[in-house]
Length: 105
Image (cartoon, rainbow, N blue to C red; front, top):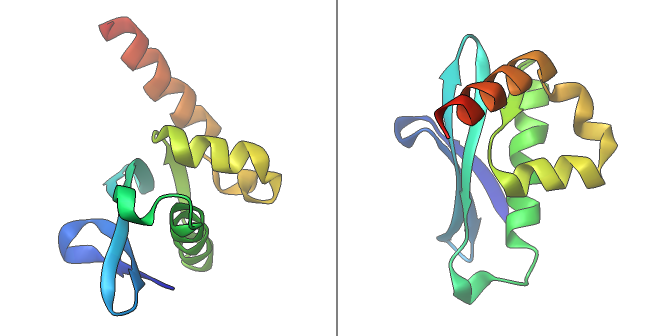
């Protein structure tokens, strides 16, 4: 499995056997990477594809010296279970976006 940043499509992709097996959609906001949505087809479910995808994306983001806002529930749970990635989270922006979303609902 290989994770790559497809900047043209604003997403990290995981490649398995030469084909895209899942992606993590993101947007940039205020110099932060907003991790919005992880998608792995059912055929790849339960094989660790999503976990490898998120790990690869977070490792790349760390290497680039950026911070994240984990809007995607899968990414949020991933970080809760692996506190070594918590230092990447911009908690102030995360809280602000959550407050904004709650006001809309």
